[in-house]
Length: 213
Image 1: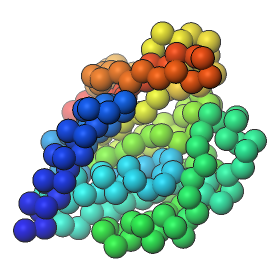
Image 2: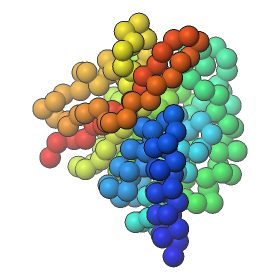
Image 3: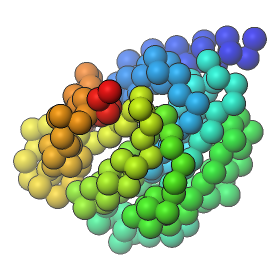
Image 4: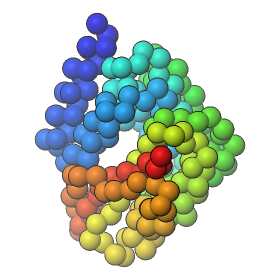
């Protein structure tokens, strides 16, 4: 009965995203349904909403989901926000209270180049949406590679279209460009979300990576 509840709720969320300004996240939940992960790792927890959506989508097929969330939490400040083009997350305790009732979760507070480097657990599904500086995303990808199983999937947020000046400093574009096509399947996922931020036009999508068998 609970699985049916999670399925209905996930379909509702997918449809809701399809009629919103952030259509790309409908694809994220769809991929969770298709790939049925038992473990999810997210870099950039923010307020835990996306984590909850991914966990509940995964629970359509598996009752016991393990979630690992990495963020700065209380360490975040305005300087880091500006440097990373990021958002202010909730406290670690607030996120824990929000998510711990629905899954077995572990939260890691600190800079991901350190916390993720020391993390050893293999996972099924990884969502990279933490700091947006190229160097930060490069480090996240480098550390995530050792966590991949045979069929693991990695989704990068913030693939920028039609903004060369932004791509020089931020986003996953330059990182995914260097990923070996011989070793990994890679592709842009459909749905490009368009925003205007301080008179600057932004077009953002997701990027898919999976190890070749």
